[in-house]
Length: 197
Image 1 (cartoon, one colour):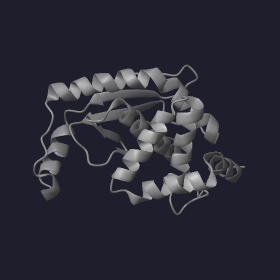
Image 2: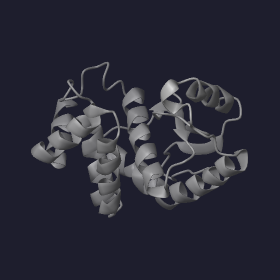
Image 3: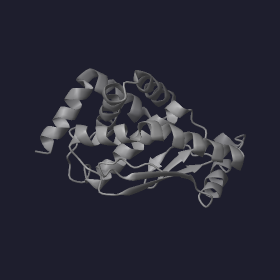
Image 4: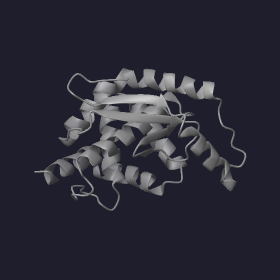
């Protein structure tokens, strides 16, 4: 569990024993993953402990960084992050993340999903405050770029995130990274803040 003293939400990372069998059963039912082997519960719990340690290292900086950059605040004071054996795509309502990420991949995924939570709390998409409505991940990835480079000073996270985005089946992610590089992450964020005035 982590809390930033400046009233950022508590982020609780835990194994979810109720969701896990649902995800395991669904994955095993998919023909493309028929050979997938679920990790042991001990391995999943070890990943949870590792994820918690990694998050504690950066939590206040990441939360404050995305809030400062956007000018937004979280409405929620508590956000659950559920870890399951496997999940083909993480998501943010609720946050569900698979157990087999490296520490760097986990931080990239969690930061991404927390930005979606911040946007949801502030109705960014519903209120049309996104300067790039054709691909909301342009703004998400600009913020991630800012967090990795300016806030954490860990450009290796940027490279990890770009590599894993390009390797997946989510072409909107790869396109978003391309557009952020083309426009400039600072400019994307500036345009977003201008729309909120």
